[in-house]
Image (cartoon, rainbow, N blue to C red; front, side, top):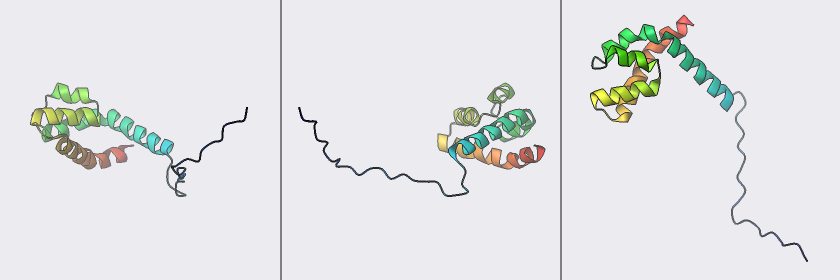
Amino acid sequence: MRPKRQRPSQYPAPVKVRRAPGTPTKNQLRAAAQAEARAVKEQWLSLLAPAKATWAKLHPQELAGVEGNFHKLAGLVQLRYQLSREESDRQVNAFFDTHRAPLAAAL
C-alpha cells in the first residue's frame, strides 16, 4: 500500500508574533497583577472609610466582605445603585485609582 499524500492546507499557517524587547511577559504581568491584588487586600481595612463615604448605600459588613476584590465591589455597587456593569466598573476603577497612590507609597 502506498502512503496517503497530504493535501495542502487551504489556510495559511499562523504567524508567530514575538513580543517586543523590553515588554513584560505574560507571567510577569500576571505576577504584577497578583502582587497588586495582594497589596489591596492587605490594605482594604484602611480603605473601608473612604469606600463607605463613596458608596453610602453599601453596608459596612458588605464592604468588609469584599476584601479588596474589584469584581465583588463592582457587583455590590451595581446591585445597590442599580447601575450598568460598565458604570459600576468605572466607579470602582476611579475609586481604586484615587486610593492606589497611597497604597503604593505604603509598600
